[in-house]
View: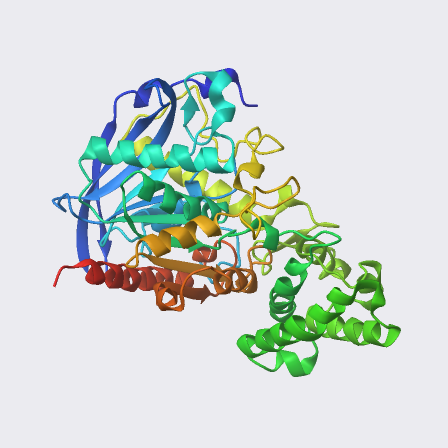
Length: 493
């Protein structure tokens, strides 16, 4: 139950709390300082309207010119707990296997082999209304609940943090996961407008355009993007035909994608004009690539959404797959977002790790819970319309559109030819799938000469692919290379 008190300033962080710790990483001992604090958010008149809870990690004696990375998670109302306690920070909880199992209890906090602290200081920002972040005036809270409103608030938080800590000479990187891909895309341009020049943006399992994540009667792109991800899930659970199961996943995905982008796309385009013969061919191919039964496919009018698929693939076993990581399952009938096993399991582990670690090194509020997710922020209160794409002619968007900040990101990349963009996705993410992300990247309105500034990587896992320890370490290596390239290009020669 969220009470009014949970939106009021919390005493322990009215003054920054600090601690020191160390980790072992690749044969090195890294000492670092931790600061947990409120960063005020002011309106244009200079009045404090909100306070964002931020946790920063800085390498001891690292200097004021080390890169700084500002990170945040996704869906409106979501804190930054996942990137913080499971992905980037120097401490995390133990995970086994390839991320296919729930983290085992007790959740023991230890050194994080996937941290990026050795090549960047880290700042984790909880957006207003999440974590310990709060509004000073409850009546003003909704002014932060919208696409552009949120981007502006995060930009102000970043500028205030840099001013407080004297880091305006540091290279700035942004990391955003899921909806954080949309947020970060707008944030890069907003920071440029505030005379802060980000060097790079990392979009983890990003929702770059909501238009590519939803399906309606007249908007069926997502169905095409999703087929390869559905095929990957069926391959993992050994539900495909024997000839497909005998081949590597990459080959099977490529075949499914080629079919979806040609024959299936044309079928969807035709709508009711598709012939009975064409329907039969598509029915057989969908059965082949998704492993769903013909009656189920017919009932869906040969249009398989990610959530519908999650409830059907293993229905004969009484199981539902996660649509964030289709390798994971739980008993049930039909998809239920609240019971998605990846979010459910990772939330509990991250929450426990946060309280276990920070409860040891500093004072946490006893009368107020850390809000991993605040349902009052989403649920119809979020102003998505402020982020609708303009029409091709540049006219203002109309009601019924979809939020996307890709146009802002493209503008930012044109403004700064040295800025670089790193996007990544997991093989078994049904929602923000590999092909959805690739489609968005391939349609960015930037000159060909700037496309070398876009990097795309895929990992063995789902939405939170870093729950797979091997993928997590590979992600760290890829980011280390990405940061090095960005920084090298910005060195005056």
